[in-house]
Image (cartoon, rainbow, N blue to C red; front, side):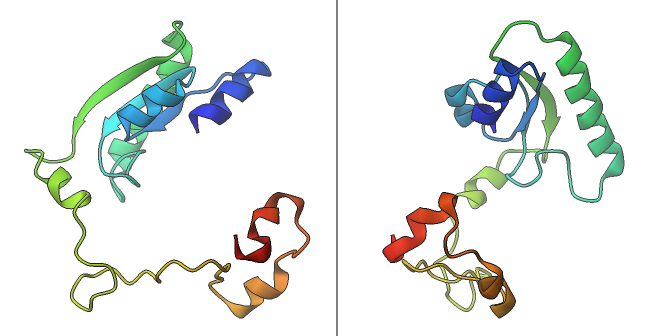
Length: 137
């Protein structure tokens, strides 16, 4: 998102990104970012916690107004849990596709995969931005 934000800014559109991956955010150097030390997928606050989500959005809008130094990252200081032990589990999944892992993702293949047959039927095989799918690459 940071790369997209930089291009939008170059076109005159002010942006602020939400991030749960500080090192990646620093590497892509978005114009301005709001950081939560939360698991990926919870970047706008906890699922179902409307009050927290409103707070995150309000802080993001405030950052859009107040951040003047390009590349600034504001840490909201929110804590996912009382300790950081959740981080140990996030990056250490059990063996993929084992029955007890809870990971039901399909293994990687060189060919495109679709959720439903209708999705494959609707896919444009001549899509100019999907040329990398040709020949199973």
